[in-house]
Length: 374
Image 1 (cartoon, rainbow, N blue to C red):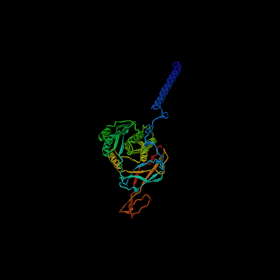
Image 2: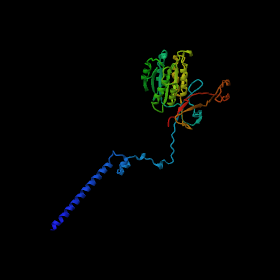
Image 3: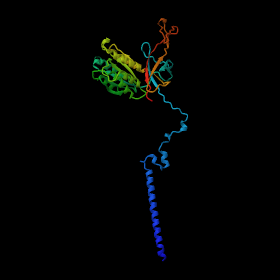
């Protein structure tokens, strides 16, 4: 009787224990699934609530986490150094070396500036784009151009310098990329093909852009040999000038005039080249004949090797996306003179024969710069 009485109770207990075990297993499986979901690397960061503390600590480098206490009191200022290459020539158009920094004054939009960088003969390497007019009108002087340009390449390139050769006709074509391989560059010059039109503005624009891709802290120079007859450019005068200024490119222009009479020349093209060249701080040369090309290239080479480099931080700083005017003046020193009647006027318009004759220098430099977008 006692055995029959407790059998239902035993069965009920077994059923209850079974249910508890099943529930416990289900809870454990659900917890494991939830944990796996939380550790799933494909889930977004905000869903990784149970990530271990050591993983969270290493997800961001300590150096990248700003420390407000360290930054407190610091003033962050963005400054742009403006570099100006300056050519100083005496009354005989010879480079004037060894002038002290005190002889120079720099003005930015008429505001005097403190010179922060001064190099008497800048060590900045050269990137040069040598552009030869290959139009039909320039073919008469082409043999002399080739020889003078070949000699210039050998003369101008020094360690660290690079030069590229371009032909300029209705198109602007790079015949040899930027390098210091003299033989390769000379070969490119000697095989410039004849073209038709003349795209001077395109040459200045594309040359400035090509030079800007060669790197910073280098001097950018275009040397353009042409008859000055602009005929086929896609770019216009202002676009070419702005591109040269924007990329801090120095332009030297050699205009070979096959006709001496202005009635037979493109004087408008010549005047445009003079304006662009003056804006960049370069020079325009008008040889009387192709036999003078060697002397002109030699003069350009000497000038490039005796340029002063001035650098300043504009104060006040100009607004973004604007062009600012630059003016550089040089105070003349004095030299003795045997004949007081030979004394010339100084910059102030005064002369003093007893103290000697002030040396009046001509100064060339770029006339403006682009502030850039900030």
